[in-house]
Amino acid sequence: MLRQGAGTLQLVGQGLAQAEQARGFATLKDISIRLKSVKNIQKITKSMKMVAAAKYAKAERDLKGARAYGVGAKAFFDNIDPVAADQAAPTAEAKKQVLVLITSDRGLCGAVHSSVVKEAKRILSDAGDKDIRVVAIGDKSRAGLQRVFAKHIMVSGNEIGRAPPTFADASIAAKAVLDSGFDFETGTIIFNRFKSVVSYETSKLPILPLEAIKAKEALTTYDSVDDDVLQSYSEYSLAQLIYYAMKESATSEQSSRMTAMDGASKNAGEMIDKLTLAFNRTRQAVITRELIEIISGAACV
Image (cartoon, rainbow, N blue to C red):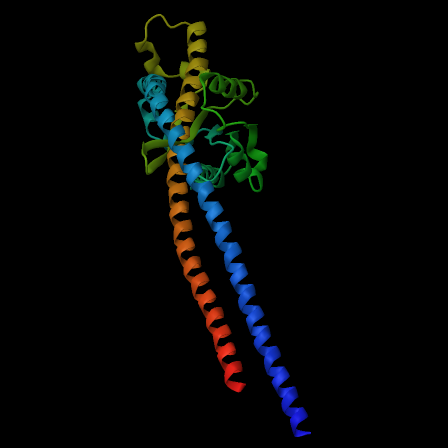
């Protein structure tokens, strides 16, 4: 009876050892799968960083020429209404306002899009009795406002960010604003102004409809400005400002994506080092346990 009991105890002990060994191999396999997954992710983030760097270089070159459009259009509005140079002025008194949000359809670029949406939410939350409509250029701005401020979205556009923005894209957006049927008194373009590779600033540009431009007393400083010329220029200047804002936002997006993918690649590298260390330690523990079992078995014999 005693021998049989001892044999039973020995079999149970061997089963526990095999279970522990199986658990060790399972953990080793899990770490190996995780390590392979993180390495694949690092390859993707490095590739995205290289693509973003190439697109950023092109976007920065294009931005130098596009800034002439924005500076020229903004100078006209600043001359006829110096108070509009203050970014808070366009949203201070007017009851009917329009917000043009410049984002894109693509993510993985830090807080570029969320900063624009956050500023729009702040303005809409403080609207009170004002009638504020939103023109969402890019899916990210529309998605950010869809849940709470969906009723304020007047026009939305997508397919933004896959290719560099052009003046034709800005003209389509400007035409959508003018043909929306909403007679706004003033408006604001919210976009990200590019500053450097690692920084950008969420900025605003004031826009005025034709009737508001005609009402400005400083307009008399310009000679030979009839209604047809003024109407044509007001429509063209709106497209100019949107084009300028789209170029600034595109450059900010690519630089932010490049920085974000660089950070993701570094984080993946740190995870690979930790998982490699854990893999080696686990493998060494499994080998050590097997050697102990072999030596113990040989000692018993």
